[in-house]
Length: 360
Length: 175
Image (cartoon, rainbow over all chains, first blue to last red; front, side):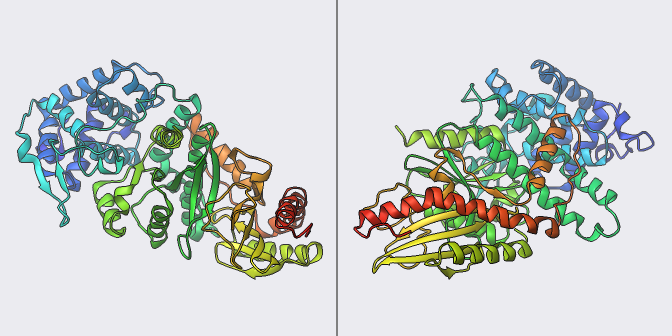
């Protein structure tokens, strides 16, 4: 039985290479990292802590594997969330599946961090909370979960209860019933599904790719290699998103279009069909928010007419903290207008729907 | 676009436009674009040729416009060629490619090929190591032929639009 350092005080098997660990050992290490980070709401942290107690850990691992196996999509990693939902999986099963893929493919420290990030973000959602409850049998009163996390009275209610808006930007701030945009369209083009699989790999391998580039760089390119690789990764994600958007029929798509003045005057994509426009700004991550990004979104908001849509397409799903920083950085009313997506299937469905709606 | 390439691109466009379309004068050089050239057809009718760079790629596009003001009408939403309207602008490529992704002029296609290779590697579940962009010295000699091709397209698709506009406003052929 694996013992979790935080829970039991015992140590993980560091003499054994991570790639040789069992699923439960990897899961314990992932949970350990999240608990140590201290970023989770206290109630969720308590539930997770209970779930990875030695007596629950094997059960949790087995249940995750079982739920994931119930949707046998070989090979691991290729099944998009949308497919799972389209086949009738519940949100908890979706998360179990995602966790299974993430944890079982852990090979090294970087993978552990990546899996921890995925689980940490999922734990912010109600569905993940429910999943943990299924493992542990913990049934806490939902009303006890409400925690105020900033001065603007943005409430994180781990038990749900706040009304859900259609804007995905609200979802991570108000965990509850998750929107299922991709599943709503069962006829996703093959290319979009393939791009979604690529998206996952891109996000998962981003740090490793950067580390490898730095390690392999020659002495003269060492000082610039980090910036260069980060730029390339950004361009790579932009290229992937362009390929997804190009699957929408009957649209016009212009890249790098000017929509304002000065810094942040150019937006990545403007898609039009008839008189409807969709403005898309693509970022790999919004951990740092330069003024250019703020201006781009503000300009797009200003330029968008009623019926137009402004989308912030972020490869790495923004955390609560990042969303709050974004909301605080944007002028009043802009954040509410922006739709935030973090997957290719979501991007495709949202843009396609937005361009269709006005046409009717 | 790298600044040395942008400078050379501007220089080449200015030289070619001075030769081929001397009636166009340079009006604006802004951070986000390589340059804007305009011509006054009537007291309240200006036509524009703008070269726009892409921020993160060595790629450019041309934009065409008309306006009743002397400044490029970037804020105008009209993309239909309705010659009665006071202003219009669109990417030049849209005159021959109506839908889908627009045509662009790539000065470093190696970057795109590298991204395609990265995509193929991801599908094989491998991690791709990006190659370096071609050096400025490699890219600069490609500018002249690209500018010439762009201006040929302008001659074929842009000039007829401006002539139609001028005829519609009773000014006869202007280019």
